[in-house]
Image (tube, rainbow, N blue to C red; front, side):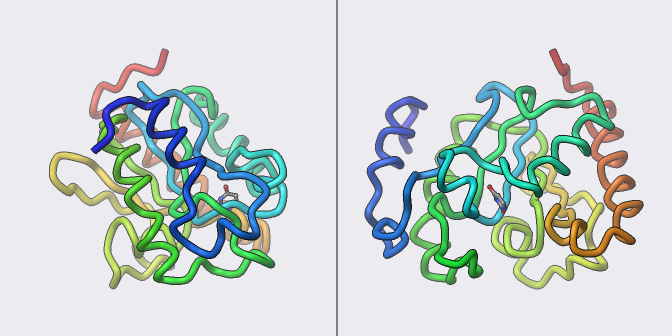
Length: 189
Ligand code: URA
């Protein structure tokens, strides 16, 4: 594992391990506070993220910001990363082999951040980092402890934007996150 964040970022930004390197504009390494105890993990960059080099800056990101705000968080107080760091063409799902080739960057980010809580945003992230048999519609909002870290799958903001009747469930999940933050006595500065 690389222990220096800047070195990790530099190496990741020069990665050519998979085909997505050929079509990307930027490597979207992540955003936020590296010393935060809360890590959010999305699926992969979309069009706007690829252009700006930052995660969740499009419409999904606006909803994520609003959800964070409801529990007195901001993206500056957490860390936000993705399973794959480069945009899949036409925003298709990242292929299993792309996820597998990219996941070590996230593992190394996790190793340095040492979060107490990891929130998987959407099915793809939840299956990859929590449980490959998980059912997002049934299991979202449920916390699971793995090796001393709490993991919670929730919906992807884009899925909520497609079906706003899911908004109330989404708000419930963020309330559960807030309760877990309080239960664990995590300081949000
Ligand atoms: N969707 C994701 O999963 N990640 C992003 O960074 C943006 C949109």
